Amino acid sequence: MSTIRRTAAVFAATAAMGVSTFATATPAEAAVCGKKANVYCSMSHAKKIKGTVKYGTRGAQVKNLQLALTQMGFKVSATGYFGPQTLNAMQRYQDSRLVPRSRNLDARTLRALQSGAGNWAAKKGVKKAAPKRTVTSSITAPASSKGQRAVNFAYSQIGKPYRYGATGPSSYDCSGLTGAAWKAAGKSIPRTSHAQLRGLKRVSKSNLQPGDIVGFYGGGHVGIYVGNGYVIHAPRTGQNVKKVKMSTMGFYSAVRPA
Image (cartoon, rainbow, N blue to C red; front, side, top):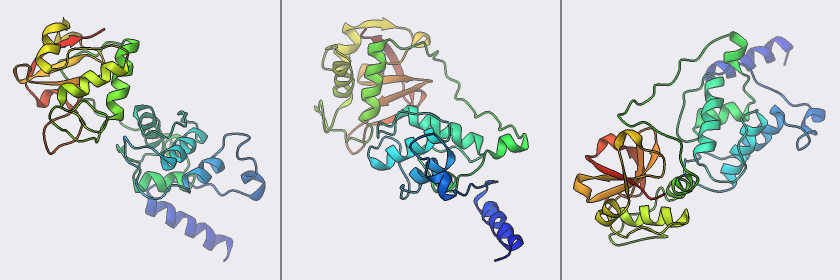
């Protein structure tokens, strides 16, 4: 194939993907993987990923995503858990490549990583519009160390089923989840939602910080506040632990265990 035809083929593939440039590793360049972070190492890790990788999951595919992002300059610890840090790194990568943000590693982002897609936005001087932020009535203050540990635990339970009376580790009811989260943070709290809301330090809705327990519907339901107007909660029979906007439920009160 002539040089012109090869160049045309590359640009055709680029247009189909929606990204601008690709990297091609020479044997010498590929040999440095493991010694110094570079795009070729990122491509190598990304090519080990098969299909969509979902937020909240664990495993080798997540670790390869983390390594691929780090090799592209978006550093994240290679823990094998797809949590908030990995999501943040992936979305910053998506912004730099003008790939639409997603919550899971989608096909388009994976193709960009596997192909070594260049930083189109930086090369062309294009500024990506700032993502829309949810405006809520709650102000997020910095979390305490225990509060952050409770939040981290809650994130790791997303996807587990609701079961009335359950306190983990395989299923939870609403107060079972909040109690388990704070137990993981090193503090025991009352068992039921009403007892938690009555027995712990009350905080205002405008002063919430990650780790606080938020009560809804007259105190019959609780969740863990994780910041920016969101809570993680165990909803009801037939549903799984999930992260939702706090505004989708009727706010009652909030408390801070520590």
